[in-house]
Length: 108
Image (cartoon, rainbow, N blue to C red; front, side):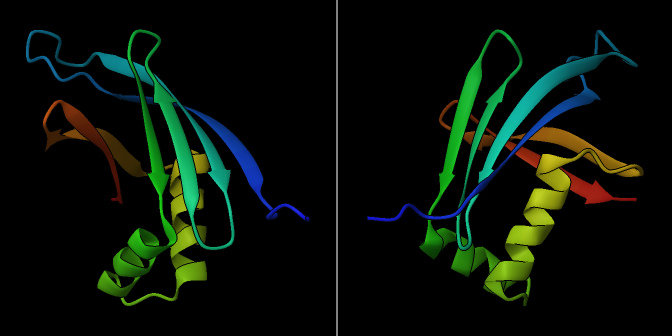
């Protein structure tokens, strides 16, 4: 049985700290991505806490359709921004509820 083809990326991000007591300070996080044809897995850590994301094919299809993109283009965009820090892009965390956090990014 042949395994599914995949690629790996590892990224160090510096994102603005959440606390207002620390304006101008940054939190360093590390993102390891495993990129497949129609899904991806992320492992994220700040050295103290760790989070994982296993985006299923169904979740990727739904998100790609929300952006009016074919799945391969959506995967390529996600890998571009979560596999390699993009100059001029802003990264951060948002509250996803129940103690979960969501990594977000956008281009300026």
